[in-house]
Length: 392
Image (cartoon, helix red, strand yellow):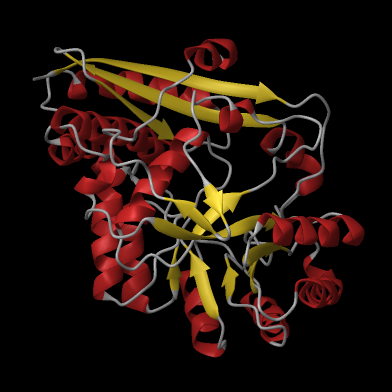
């Protein structure tokens, strides 16, 4: 069997009106209308000469059509390959640009979508669910947390926390860091959230790199968070600042979590070697696909680190893939459930309408593992969504 076709669908859903950045980003007043101007995803479809189809996704927060162009350039390397050997195909694609400096960013995100589609195809050829190729079915129920309590008015944030409790969540993530100099106000909000949800709820904090290069400021914030029993401090500073992360990991008792902005096994090998991470959060649609997830997962076990898959602002396809990862990994910690869209006025069709059937079933703090009787990722794509929101 050979791969005979690679198709790409760059998707963009504009928001009906501008919104303020719901997370901390530098120069928000200048860039938020681009970064948070709409919902984006790039979907990849590969087909074999026997008609087997596999789907993948490229994680993207900007210019999904750029990923299409990269994939079109890579397609000649993929056509004719054996879909049962996606790792080999990955190495060929990576070799095309590795020694030219394109070993992160858009190039690796493009590889990710192709690679996941090939893994989906391989699992379908064998008639097995995808998780069987990642370590088997380790669990039927996946511990999960609500993401996220975003930077809005205090009354809105506390009401959202109460809604999460009613939904059955026993763990929630808080966003902060939008105004680094105003961290005292952020800490007061964390205190109010803790009082609202009680001491039995696990709370984590995500700064989305809000403290940039100022790891000393991040340290002060982290020490304040420890007073409220915060379990982990996620992405407090820039992902480029590996020694800043090491400093924080060495000086805080709480766990340091990051990895959603990192690429390939090589980034993670550096993290592990420097002992600057306590909880690992790769995104399969950014890190290099499932070929890289498998290698990173093995390293996390060797370094005795828990794995908490990042989902974030992706489509439902990435979430479905991530559920297979969560089902298979022995050292899974918890799974991120994005419970709200950026905009309260504009629902995200890439999250809610892309798949014909629900891929996630949530019950009292847990997601159900993917069905054992559905080969591959186990999803049916809504072709109307691909056609309606494709930008080229």
